[in-house]
Amino acid sequence: QKTAYEIRLSLVGSEMCIRDRIDTDSGILARNEWTLWLYPRATFPSDGVVLYDPAGALADLAAHFPRGVADLRTVKLVIASVFDQAVETHLREGGRALIIQSGDGLLPTTGVPFWRESVKFLFDHPAWGDFPHDGYPDLQFYHLATDRALDLVALSARFPAAHDFKPIMRRLDARLFTLTDYAVEFGYGAGRAIATTLRFFGGAGDQVIDLEDNIAGQYCLHQLIDFLNMGNLTIPLNL
Image (cartoon, rainbow, N blue to C red):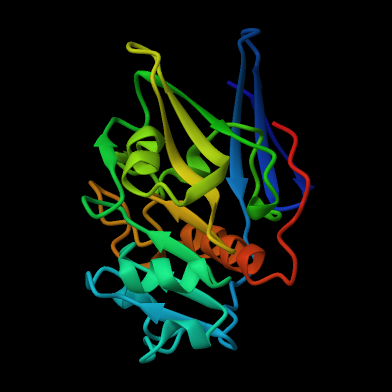
């Protein structure tokens, strides 16, 4: 039986779509489509950026950033595993922080499934940079998926100085219709921060187990860091 097989590739930005079509003598027609994501190699900035890791959760970043200094107020951007008094002081005085908390910690979170029983919204926030998405997570988030989401109501109560919340990635529970967040930008004193529960280092289920192998994680993290490292964060955001 004779079969014709064709593959078409289309490249748009960093997203590639592969389609195939099979026609047989019996008249059977089959079509499939897969989306692949291509990412440039992430090069992390080191000037003015410090790693602050009291929780011991950011070991994969130690090769890219210097570890904490005696006074966080002397640096521009802190990548932190906790939101403690040192990070609060840094932010109050105009610093910036990326707080990565994939599990329990000082930021209030709730345990929720990522892929089921919910709708996820990726907002048109400049922190995404050119990380590819269509407003929702597809399989480019497979190795970023997390089972914790931020509870902004509880966060606001615990940290009343937090203000001006701008959602980056939000979850609507399909059963309870409650909102939680996977990534959010907010003000704190004179500073700005992004808090996220995304797993840039993988490690859940059959995800990759470190940042080196999490190519999407590297690139997504790179975009967030670049955004916070910009000279001016007063970018208009339409929600």
